[in-house]
Amino acid sequence: MAITTFAEEIYLCALTGRVVGEHLLAGYDKIAVIGMKNILCSSMAAAIEASYVSKSGGRAWHFVAEKGDEEKLARELAEYDAEAIAMMFTGESDIEETKEIFINVLKEMAEGDIIADIIIHARIYASGILMEAIEDEKIHAFLRERNIYVYTISLDDGFILVNEADFDEGLELHRLAEIPVTVEHAILLNKSLKNRMIKWEEVK
Image 1 (tube, rainbow, N blue to C red):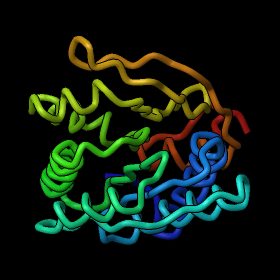
Image 2 (cartoon, helix red, strand yellow):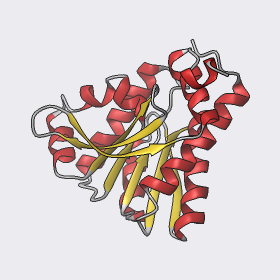
Image 3 (tube, one colour):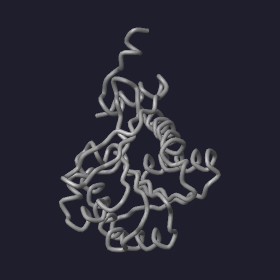
Image 4 (spheres, rainbow, N blue to C red):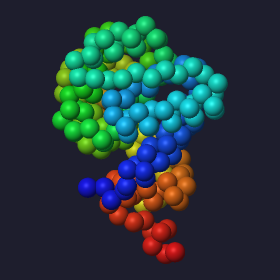
């Protein structure tokens, strides 16, 4: 259980969303951001969208992923036709619900043959949901034909890591970049993800 407060989790979403918007997405002219209908997903998505638009001047739109509406969402994504889709499924909702909706959205995106680069939230990778998703052959084939990026966290070193996902043989990440975060950002990441304090804070 995270030892962060509600306010800290919201601020953490803002800090991480800023990094994703400025560093992972700013090279695109048009993006879509998908999140579940909860506070943390919405906070993260809003931070991404605001920082992306501020940094790039590009066009962004927010899409909500809800159980039973995955097919409709995929149709909306196809119509919007973004260059990149950020799938920001955070850790607020029940993990089984998150898994079900994430996998169903990918299934519908594959069915619609949506062409876009895809950026995936660290928790989806760390929880094993992405690995489970590619057990579906259609999803696996779909992701193998796209540029898929996963950001992960180096908690000890204070970096957000940008990785390209390789689906040729299961799932393998290839590191592309290391983005340093501020001390306060690193402290919150550690409190939220590992329920621990980091070395920088311990030596104060």
